[in-house]
Image (cartoon, helix red, strand yellow):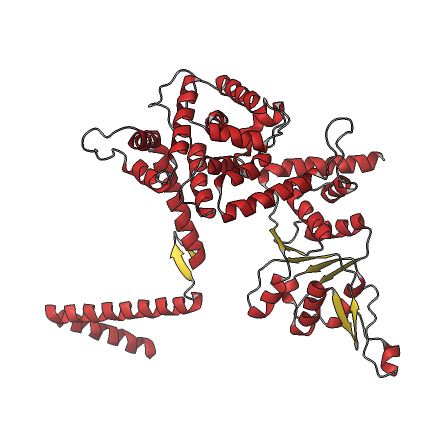
Length: 495
């Protein structure tokens, strides 16, 4: 039968292989290798066609091209941070300072640390002489006070000791207190002495990573404002940035110094169109924020009526949602719309519902799909109007007559409702039949799990001036969230 024929064919094949020459065996093996290679190439092409050109095989798993590039950039950043952490940056600061103020002695030698020299060439070359002198004096002062590293707080102390820095501080801080600059300097010296670990020389005082980031921020401020050289004012701007807010901790706690007040004076000291325009804007914002509180003295400091209580109602029982609550209040006050991007279960709709209660207005909520019809957003057609040959909608209780709206999965809106939705968001008007009526919408909160992927939806995305990515609560906040939830349940049980 079939089995016998198969056995005979196999025996004949083995007999031929035993009789074949060496060259014939090599030819047969080469032919099989070519077949295997062709089969593998065909499999790889098929796999590439399935995965697409946007995927790459990295580290034993498939990643998109963007993810692979981000992972490579992150690895390079970590490697660069480790190299800069070991670099002798303080020696390069001293070298740049001596090249500016001291006469050269013979031929200049090659730098010992190429990483530090490259970093200094990128960030310290455009530093003004006065700024370099400030940093060198601040390093020596930190060494005299016994600090182990050159920290941003020592640079802040140098700002209060430098003549230009003193003038910026006098103009930025409350001018009625003439000794605020001197008291701030004394407070910083006391703080540095408390953290001192011994006595160190200037040559042995290394840069801390925070100070290196500070000097990089100084160069970034110079480039942003399009100045030729980095000045003391750029250092003041970098020190008042949010990432260096902790540097001002002792001054805020003891003296009530607010670093934001220095920004208009620092910008005004720099000159240039962009700096002057930003200085006026910063001064206007500070004046606007100060109007929210009564001046200190006879009257107690009271926030704008209802604003603090509204913020408390929005964030009640929530963790890590303070920024989203502030953006909601800002959108309601400014009459703008807010877009929240995030995964489900991050309290997006809950915040919108609470905003409607805070504003004491009507609320409308709808989840959009590809099959959503206009009647679900704008109301059903009026049968009475149809009897009179008119095409009007009954808008009561729907989007055209609400004060606060929450539209979930907004980018799934189809073309049948897109145009009317754009007019409502942008112009606060709705075309109902042959009439264009005003819409009392204060603010609309939109949410989605994804960004728009077509040009048709880009116009809708542009209607949202305020945008925020809402992430899940971090692991360190989970215990606080659970404790808060349990305490609220216990309070309800006892009540």
